[in-house]
Image: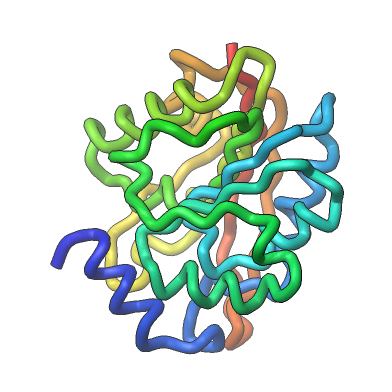
Length: 202
């Protein structure tokens, strides 16, 4: 089963209560985006099909919000969750490792895609995609499992990071601005440690 098939199977068959990464409100992501030195005029949320982040960004007044997800079912759930805001969001079904054009965006957000890239070439392709999308002075807000986080998620191996390791993956195009740790509580009450980095495009 390839990446797209795996995630389509997950989102087509499991309700929110069975998804460890589910959040009713993406509070940390929203705070980090709000606290950027300059307000973004365009945000792309990578792997955010099912997330509540996109409509919250619309509510913040961000002019352009784009969501990319490899699973059409995740996007369908996200559109339903967004309600009246859905038509103000651009929804793209696609693989981040193949997509290179996002239009006018200056903030790249990813809460839990990058840590699934265990292959170095895939991580390099991901960083290249982010660097192509975000202009100098823009930002990438990246969340991933911390060193004390899970070793596997959704049946897949993951890579765990501290702030230095995560920043080093992006060092050719981005510089670390700040980092933040959070313990996310799954819908069944188990803690998962995350590291967030805010990276500035060189």
